[in-house]
Length: 125
Image (cartoon, rainbow, N blue to C red; front, side, top):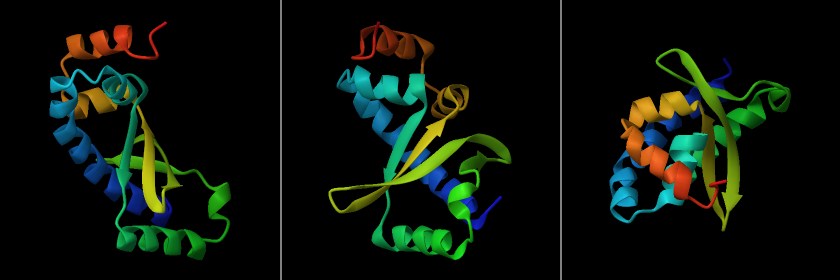
C-alpha cells in the first residue's frame, strides 16, 4: 500500500464519521438523493483542510509513478473501495467510492430507509 493510500484510509474514517452525523439530518429532511448516493452507490465525500490537502498532495508528488498505481482505501485491514481528489470552488475534497455493504454496515442504516431512497430518489428507475 502506498503512503498516499494510507493517508486516504485515515481520511476515510473522518469522512464516514461525518456521513454518520449528517445521516440523521438527511433522514429528517427526507433527502433521499443523498441517502441513495451514500447507501446504494457507496459514495462518500469529505472536504479536506488546507493542511490535509497539502499533506496528501505532497505525498502523491513524492511517489514516483503514483498515477499508475491502485488508488484504494482500507478499513481495519479490509479493502473497502477507491478514492480520488477533487477540487471544487477552490476547495479540495476527497471522494470515496466504497463497497455498499461496507457503508451500510458502518453507518448502520435501516434497510427500509435505504429501500425507500432507492425507490424514490432521482436515480429511481
